[in-house]
Length: 225
Image (cartoon, rainbow, N blue to C red):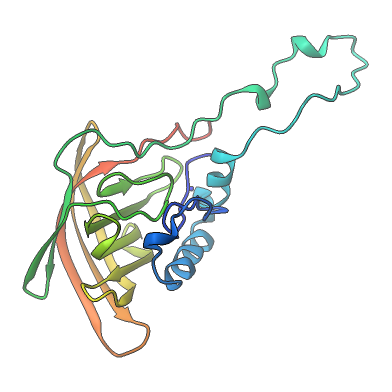
């Protein structure tokens, strides 16, 4: 999501390769990868895959001189590849970040990060709003090391982009519909509400989650930089 960051999945994989930095010890089911790939295809305008690669790409070797008939010294010309590349920042300050869920009458608090490498290594329940687009992405888990329940949702307004939910047994459900409403942001704190309906890939079961969040925002470079 031009250099706005990006989405990925297998714990600690960089998405774009989207999936270069995940740890195998808490790797979610493979259906997550498919959901995230659909996310990338659905929102190309944000650069959700390509820009993550740009954010993490090592500048090319520009040691070979380029012929220049103008007589101007190559050393006098600024090179874009020489500039430092600044990736998105998921390092959240100390604070009470959480997502409160109502799952059919059962109340659950998700107060740990969902390590799926959306743009960087999540350190808290996270809300990502890349500056080059309008998609909001929310992720969180109940406990450390992706202990379920866990959720990930991505909405463009009220249009579902991608998402999945892991219930307490580890069963995976895929996002069908819902929305995120961002009410306010103060520093790194984003406050809002959301609703999401998920269906199982292997049965007729479904899950509806309604809740509110106090999530840490992902920091991005300004759009176009």
